[in-house]
Structure formats: structure tokens, C-alpha cells
Image 1 (spheres, rainbow, N blue to C red):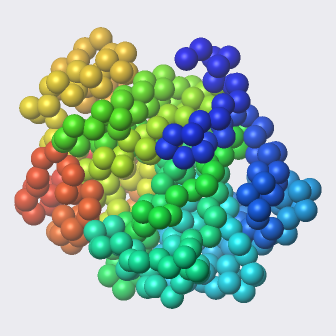
Image 2: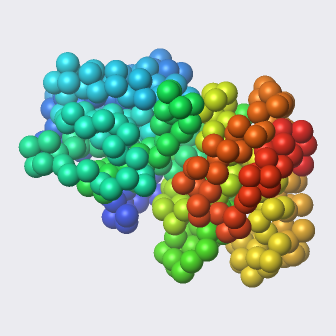
Image 3: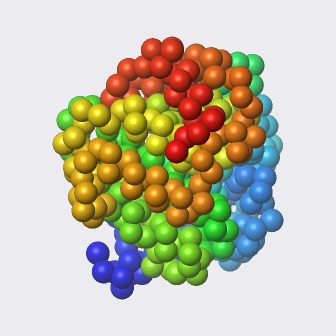
Length: 391
């Protein structure tokens, strides 16, 4: 991929319709009208409701003659009670679609609201490991459009969403095979205003997605290929995007890399996410930052014995030294380069929570696809090390 190509508009149909390119948010009104929509509900997070891309979205929809409303009561780690409130906003506003715009929390919130907007099914009946509930044709899910404004979560092409169960203090993955975004709109101009720290945290999140997905056992060449291409883009362009926030080539490459990694982890994730999900559920930490801190600890646990996969990842990242130890050292160097803290305690996660977090992490669906199973004692040690000195 050459630099000019990154700035050219592209339309892809795999795995869903994707419109990529700078400035393509301007097409949203016409695209919604072409889908027969008249009154979409915009879903975003609390920190994004007053940002420029929301007012731009309103304007583009209005120019196409569409009404719209907004629901922005979504936390950094979306909660089940917020999803219930969003469902009521959808119904009371007589909306016919959901446009999820923002970072990972907005994506998760919009998708979760979509799952429950037109039926009386309990949110937790959509849990990942449960048998998919039957959806009658008259209760079909509303049209879903996703517009990421960070290059990290990669949540724009699937229905999966992470939601905190407030009663249990745990995060669970919810989804349904009949819910697919009708359009993912990837406009790198929307990520230019992202501060350096959020650029780093979300970009590191995408890197974790690619690494964990590729390390999941099993033959899945589609996901593995996307994970490696994602690593290639992220390793080259994440430091540039952090240093040069207005570099649209870097922003575009990161947005594509994030999207590829998000598709790749349909194969599964691992202990980084299993621990991070539970830390986020209890302490409301930023997800990508939490992942980035934990990553080296889990790599040291997982990678010995995985030399072939480490070699492929190192080649994708254009590294000269391809041993397990050199790969981990290089990952740690890159985390230092983008100013990722070196322990969870530095982001106010209290010590003493190791066993509780470990027990919850072992129940997370991501733990089941980690390449190496962990006992409770081993998971406790991973959490403790992440708390004290992750690298």
C-alpha cells in the first residue's frame, strides 16, 4: 500500500459494506435515504456528544431531509442500565435506525440498544455463549450503521458488544447472528482531532486485537491474514499518528488496521482481554489503555513454544530479530514510545483485587480462546504482575 492509496476513497463489501476515505461522513444523509430511513437515533458516548462530528452528522442528515435524535448516556464501559435507557429513547422517539458514532463504547452501546430496541427480550439473553434467541420478522432488528471515530476498537463490522452487568460487576459479550451493520463508514478525518494519549491507547488496543487474534489456536486463514496485515499497518503508522496528529495518511492507515484487527478477533482473543474486561467493569478504566498495560505480561506467559507464530508476527512488523524474547522486548519498546504506563496501579487500579479479578477473568469468553490455559493461581499472578510492574 502506497501513501496516496491510503487517501483514496474505497468501497469494500467484506465482511459487510464498508465506505472508507477522507470526508466520506458527508455521504451519510444520502446513504440513509437510499436505505429508506427517515429518523435514525444517533448513539454516542458521554464525552462525544458535544464534539464537531456530532453536529456534522446532524447537518448531513438534515440536508437529506431526515429527522434524527441523539442518545449519549453511554459510559466508557457501557452498562446494562444505560442500554435500557437507550432502548426507551429509541422507542419514544419513533426511530427506525441506529447510527453508532464514536469510540468503542459508542459502538458497543449502539449495538446493544439495537439488539433490544424492537423486542421485549432481556439483554442478557443475547449473551455470547447462550443459544441465539428467535427473532420474529415483525421484531427484526433496526438498521445499524457504525461510524468509528477512533482507530482502535475495530467494533464496526460485527454485532458483538461488551456490556457491564451492574449486578455482577462483570463484563459480558452480547450479540446475535441476525444483527449485522448495514454500513460501516470509515472516515479518517474524524480521527484527526483525537488527543495524543487517546490515539496511543486506542491504537495499542488495535495492536492487542491483532496479536491476540493471531495467537488463538486453530486454522483460520482469513482471520490470520487480516491480523498480520493489521500488525503491518499498526507497527508502521501508530507512532506517526501519535507524533503527527494531523497526518491523514497515518490516521487512515490506523483506521484500516483497526478495522482489520476487529474482524480478525472473530477467531477469539485471550487473557489480555479477559483480565481487562473485568478491570474495566470494576474500575471503569479506559479499555485500550488497560489492554496495553497488561499485554507484555500475557505475552511472557503465552509465547514460549509459539516460535513459528512469533516469527510470522515479527515479519509482519518488519522486525530484524524474530525470537520470542526479542519480539516481547520490541513490543515493550513500542509501548514506551507511545507513553503507556508500566502498571495498572498507575491508572488507579488498587492492589489487593488480584484473586477477585482473576476468578472473574477465568469466566470470560476471551480466556477460553487463549493459546495457553491458566489456573487460578497463574491468573492471579498475571493480574498481580500487571498491577505491580507489567514491564
